[in-house]
Amino acid sequence: MTIVDFQNVHRAYTEGVDVLAGVSFSIAPGQVVGLLGKNGAGKTTLLRIAMGMIDPQQGSVRVFGLDPRTQPLEVKSRVGYVSEEQILPSYLRVDQVIALHKGLFPTWDDDLAHDMITRFSIPGRQKIKTLSKGQARQVALLCAVAHRPELLLLDEPAGGLDPAARREFLETSIQLLNETGTTILFSSHYMTDVERLADRIVMIHDGKVLIDTELDELRENYSLALVQRNGQISRDRLLALEACLGVRERADALHAVFEMEPEKVEELLSREIGLTGARCTRIALEEMFIELAGGQS
Amino acid sequence: MQFVIAAGSELPIYRQLMRQITDGIAGGRLRPGDKLTSQRELAQQLVIAPLTVKKAYDELEREGLIRTERGRGTFVTTSASPLDPREQRERLRDPARRLLSRAHLGGVSLAELVSLLQELSAELQSERLSEEDRP
Image (cartoon, rainbow over all chains, first blue to last red; front, side):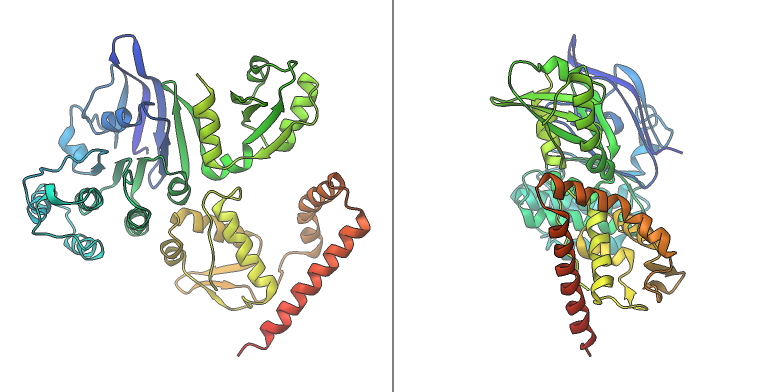
């Protein structure tokens, strides 16, 4: 049983320029997947495709085994979605927006809603347009989770929030995971948030899935090799090695990311290209992101 | 016992948690029979994914350091090490090899390494003694 299934998803906004060029992965119940990729990588597009807000031009998407485009109500009643932009009706009061959502979802949990209103000190009588960015995001999150969805799709949910508000958002997500076992797919540029919340990451690059791995494996089985620039070893030579995911060229050294433990990379470099003395280390998520997002195209 | 989690560290979060619990047991801050915070509560407290806490607890249980009793909670096991001593020794082989190669690369002699181990062992011992004074 899979909750979300993307198969060979293609989507272009300008003809011939694919934002997504064959993305495939699926998510099992209870998984928390962090969706990574630089700005414009297609994270928002992918989340919108899962919500049935846009169509893939090729390939398919299934949510709970259903097509979100032809069965939008069945899908949406079981999904919570927070978009990157503020999409709540700005002229309504907060309590009106909450009442509106409550009316839409038969599974609405009043206790959870009240709990969040209190915790976030959400001002019910205020109009949406008078809220700060953080407050608006908290209302959006409340509306997305109070019906206890089986799946949460969060697009940069913490974007523009201060560290305290971000932490509150994480706490809410973890409470939901604890109580409901919700499946979550979220995009984020805050790698420390990803490390706290996700158990798996999917990184999209050049329209395709570049990395799809459990987070713990990423830190145990991936490494960064720093190769001194001396004219003998070229970028292409490194890229041609199996397990080399990307090379970033810096002034003094080549930074190569490998899907392999550091000790084995050292062996590989010496065996395959006669290179000894390259520094190979494990790599934290943030560095991984910088090396790969900055060094590929 | 309080735990400190650093996201963004080279060490995965579940390993940070495992290490702190293991050190707690070795240092006497956690004693046989002590009850550990429930997985859900700990996830909420540390603001980390419940699955991460579960993974740490599962590994520690596999190593025989803690035991979960259904409906009662998770406890530090009474025997410090229910694993057979030979197996314990084998488990140390890999980390010991890494330690040795790091010492070698860093130009630290075997004798110096042994004296470092003795120093640390004495520290652990005194920590344990001071813990025994606690009420």
